[in-house]
Image (cartoon, rainbow, N blue to C red):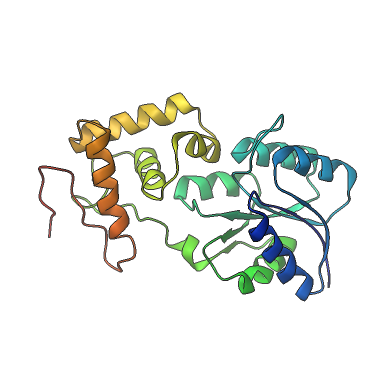
Length: 227
């Protein structure tokens, strides 16, 4: 059964690819947006069954990130959502699930799998892309991101390791910039990282090993990796 779909992504090429895949499966794309203001205007003026949207859109008057999702769920509860993201941290996934967003499609995945996410969203079934099921891992004790970190501190460091900046992480996780900054500083102190140069060298080690099937074994400066 075809659905009417609205597509929102800050990268026009990504939006074009999403639209092409949806149309090839006989869904009708009723609009496309590249920023939050246009997205909310479409939602106000155009009826649709489903929204396929990036989490971090260029924002104007309307917010992006988790505040955007909350507003959409509040104002348009009948619209199902497939969330496009490359920031598949556990805290983000939990927050999305709490908001009723059950279909999360990793932007690094092949778009040919997108129709499965669309189908899952329409029937209210959980869907995570394979890459989203295995995000930058929270490390076992003594390894990787550190056993002394809180889950939120690990989530923040994992987001930094994926190349996201402070503003984007705060928007995506639905926390204030001040809170994210405080959690970053707390994690740095626990890891023995004295400054941003050491912090980013540490993250570079995590990122370099992220594709390994083993747990991340990078260590902060001055420490040795546990076997």
